[in-house]
Length: 185
Image (cartoon, rainbow, N blue to C red):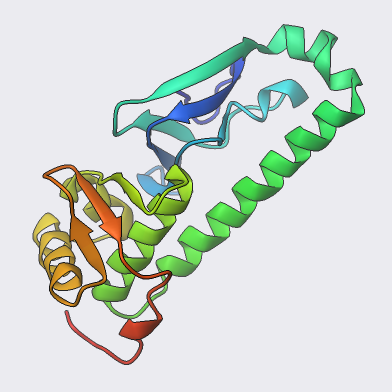
């Protein structure tokens, strides 16, 4: 959907789905750093003439509403309500990045998986959501697929998460605070 360093030609809003935000680091290695969902902007640097700061790849069925960036520059950027909405979306994105950064500093993978599921639910705007593949979650969390599967099973066992079907689940608590002090790896 977007390539780091490229100049996007459209500004889009994610209507449905989940995208993996990848970033190339100073050493050239590309790593997943965030998952973005409904309501997030795709190409938000484009109206300012700046290159994309992330590469975005869809990981669940996704639909994005896009508008040509030239039309935005000529028409919408001159209107304060549009500017305010754009600035708010960028600020929300920065908060999301901070949340994912904080998640990666959790001590246990059980807490990391729990917090990741809560962040995904927040991106989807619902406690019930489509679960990304274990491989996608493992890539974002710096773990193995088996580690993710084991910790999702533990969350189900402890009653913090319930699977609806193979691809969907629902969170049963508002946060992961009941896991504090629990060190399962």
